[in-house]
Length: 304
Image (cartoon, rainbow, N blue to C red; front, side):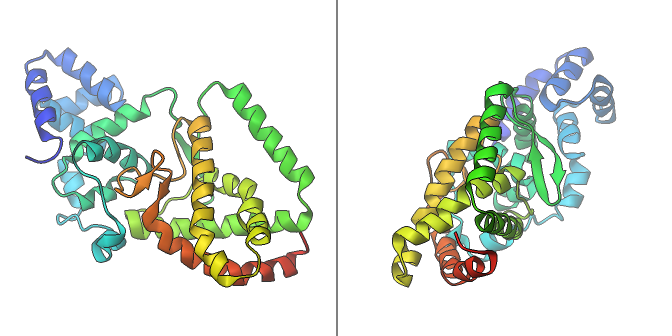
């Protein structure tokens, strides 16, 4: 039986026997739409709760089918390099998919043809109603911007303090390099997520997190490992994984969940999805680029 269908059908069998007012309340609760929208969705679907939930969450079955072009083709990397994208299954997948879809959209479901998208849509709506969980506010250029749930005062105080220390303590050349590298990485991530997830995504949180951490990631790291190409490149994945662990936990504290990336559906993810072992190959390639390019950037922007 397709993933999520059994539970969804059992729930809806009981719901179909409810009065219309109860059905409206249920659709409002599960999808976050207004009473008028819930009522209209139920009327247009002849009172069927399952179809109404589908309609409110995904625009209706016909819209879903038209959007997904029938075959539901997986994104580029899962389709052509599946060994780079090992996924969890069973209960772990059921728990992970709503969070993945919340960030990257429904295209990621193309990898899972047996998944019931309506059930996932309802779970995504439930996540959006959690008060401690950050929600998308809008975009700054190509970067997705999120709200910061309370308590706001200590979180904002910490962010302002970190920003002031960054502005005061770092020399101008290092600040220029941080901004340039953070912008460059945001473009790389925006492109890579399209290949991996079927939707371009990068966040403002990732950008400012990189601004704060790049002096450690590149300047301090280069100073510690020295001039050896082998050591620099071989250790670079570990360097990135430390960054992901530090920033991932920081984002979880500030936003209620990691709004910058989500590896929860990968079987090689660790530390609550903060790092992925399979990305090590990508980090090795990035290490080679940084080994040769960053010294040039130091020369152009000024000394440390």
